[in-house]
Structures are given as structure tokens and as C-alpha cells.
Image 1 (cartoon, helix red, strand yellow):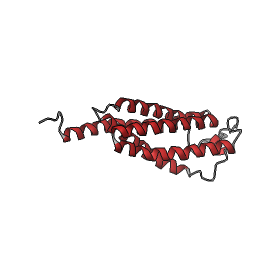
Image 2: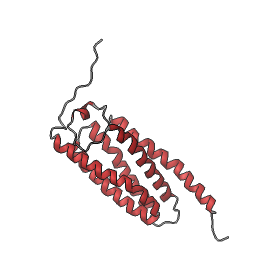
Image 3: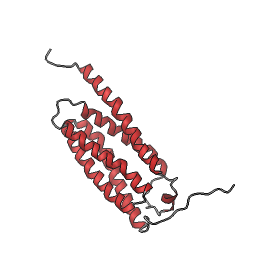
Image 4: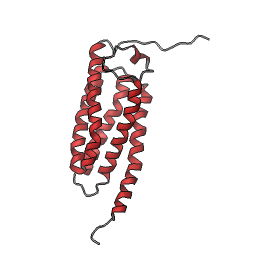
Length: 182
């Protein structure tokens, strides 16, 4: 036998990586949004003018978990490629783009920095394109799993840009918290 590991051992290795990366990505992503108060429940965000293409809030709640799952699976595939020369650069670039992704919600929803968030999402898109290209050099399927994320980032960047244009005072907009009188 000339192989160091059988096909079933390699599949189990991929499964182990996926059991680590998929939950990690699927927990950290939504946690960033939860901590920053993202979504339609955010009083400041509700007060902003939205572009006509703005999907309903439920769309984000459906799409992001799917994208996080696909990213986690793609990362597991790359981590499982033991002898791939670009494995670690691809993982490093993925980590960088993912950290930037985690910073977007606090910047936009938490700090109300719409313009800065737009430039951050452009950076995320560029890093995600680079990640996808490196993933493709390691495992073609891993790159294909990143394509829906790239498409959604492109759409999200357009939404961010349009919100910025529709709300030039968004950074200074004050939305009072809901009050109850006892």
C-alpha cells in the first residue's frame, strides 16, 4: 500500500474538520450580529430610509446561516488538504476576511458608521475574492462553495452604498429607545 491514509480515513478527517469549522463559523457570524443589535429590531436602522431592493429582515435570517455553513464547509475542505502548498495562505486569508466580516455588523449597526461600513464591505469582498481564488488552487469545490457568499457580499455592498446615499446624516441620526411608563 503506497498511501498513508485510506479513503475512509481521509473522509473521517474531513468530517472532523467540518465538525470544528462549520459550528465555529455558524456561531461566530450570528453572534457578531446579535452583539451589535443588527436587524429590523434596531431602532436606529428602522429609522433609516431603505433602498427599494432591501429584502425583508427574514431573508437575512435565512441566507446568512446558509452562507456561514458553506464557508465553514469550504474551510474544512481546505484544512483537510494536507499536502496542498497554498493550504495555510488560503486559511490565513479566510481568517482575515472572516474577521473583517465579523466587524461589519458592529460598525454598521452598533456604531452607525454607514460610510465606513461600506468601505469595510468592499475590503471584505476583495479579501473574499482572494480567499476564493486561493481555495480554488487547493480544492475546486471549496471555491465553488464560496461563490454564493461572493454574490451576497456584492449585493450587500450595493445595499450599504444605497443606504449611505439615502441617509447622509445616518451617523448622527438619533433614534430614541422605546420607553415604557410604569
